[in-house]
Image (cartoon, rainbow, N blue to C red; front, side, top):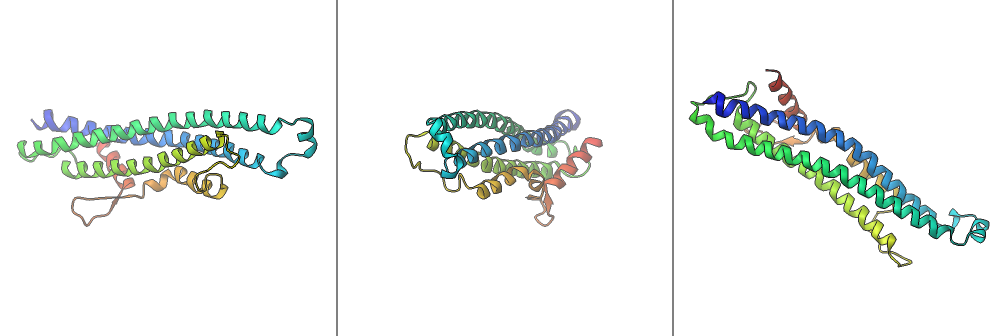
Length: 222
């Protein structure tokens, strides 16, 4: 019963988590490039609105130059936002895969007692892995929330700039280069995400997401 009902699906769940985490990391690298490109477009738009951005002779020769530049820039911003959302949707799908695998592990926990306590893993109990998987999933969900909040701010910034108002109501810090750099670094610091602490079943051992990844690797090699 253990082999049929527990061991294989349990190892498949860990494999699914490991695969989803690797793919999430890959898409996050693409997301960093996409969000950086979008922020640069918006900062260029902001810089172009400053009085010293254009030589007076250019404005005299081409009175509609600024308006055309801003329109083209906002179009580029919309395209960049769409690309960013596509990448983040991919990342969210992999978090959903981690979520599903964590649920799968949790449903297998009661079966251990029915299989005379047989454990499917070499470096921990099924219950331990189920709890670590759930904690890992919540960590990725929090990371996604931070990214989605930044995207919402960027979207609101574009919509404000697209409006007819001469003084658009912009989200705080939306066109501040330092503030945006801090947000981009949050996207970029995916390795830092691995330092997030996970709840360990004995409540005394401190494990990080990186430790969990190491355990997944070890279990895959048994």
